[in-house]
Image 1 (cartoon, chains in turn cyan, blue):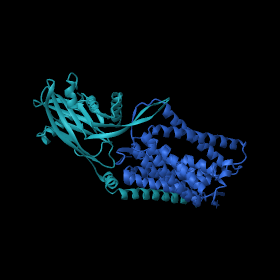
Image 2: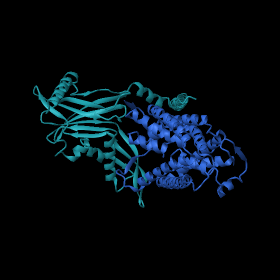
Image 3: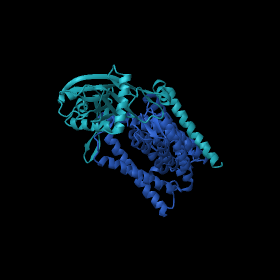
Length: 250
Length: 306
């Protein structure tokens, strides 16, 4: 482990012990404030675990249902051939685990506790069902990973023994595309091939400043927002027309 | 200079939408097209969700067309009488087109039919414009289409009732001609999910026999109203207009549209037509490639509309 990692882990553990000993973990920053200059963040989760346990840190959003177009061949051409719905999966799934991850663990347990990306994929309900559901699930996972809302980092949870206790820390990149709301943070310990302990906390993401104002207008005062959008665009257009008129010396 | 866009749910460097707006604005100012065919996929390339990209684009089209209409009005390139009739037809056609697309979706394979129609229409228009303007540039055709001998179809149009003069464009047509023409383009535009400038400009030049510069100015005038209506609906009903992104795009596009409007003065009608035909053909080939090439992912986020 590098000196920087040790420093981070030590700092995180100090915070964990002093701030949230009762819950067994700290989640920082919490809340994540999404302002005008927000460009993603890093969530740091730290705490203490039992000796010899594998640690899984999992952040999940509420379950969602999404609508997709499926491409297929029509003669020599590719086109959208049908619309399908995918549900039963969290809108966000970020996980980090201590080595060796899920290796050697029972698949049913992994699926029940959503310990890896494959478990999320297996939980996806594709409607309508078809013979190519497996490849559709694979594409769905690729799409979500490219958006940054599905992420897995096996081996990224670091552990250290401090004062006879085992501390852990994980840094998980928080995607800019994650919406405001409350997310679950689970720290699951696996010992001797079975679930030993599960601690749960929450992570809040909230809009602040200009994004908050715009979001409020767009969703709570939508007619005003529509009028504001059109009138602002007209104003900008005519203003620039006038500026150019003067610039051209007319 | 990254800024978080709350409706798009992503952050972007402000110089990117400003540059994109400028590029599309030049096309708008030169050719009277809204630029939706170009802007929406470009925004998607930079991580803006498809629904937000399409709706926000309509907002920047309001700014670009306001600026473009203003610039062309100063150069006496806007035929308000004709533009008003076109607007009437375009709104009616758009409403019919939305119903047509609903019916097509119920039949199935609607998206495939839309793409195929798009490719065929763009290919035909692009090829015709290219060959005609190339011939004009080479001097084989001494007259521009607006001055050349009217075709059989144009003579047929002259027999329709309620013939009226459009002095600004220097043409005489039945009031039904611009209304029906724009209704037809409105239907096609609604089916294809674009503003229709690519079809409208060639139709105004080749069918109505308007001068190219007046066609551009008049088309921008009617786009201003249709884009305003679409923006209001997208913002108030679908909540998909990203205000911050739209304003930055608008700032870029309004600068671009002024540059484009000045460029049109330096180019002859046939030069403008051949450039536009090349862009139309490029878009056509790009769409054809999209139909033929094997996709990397077989799933795409549904925009809910088109």
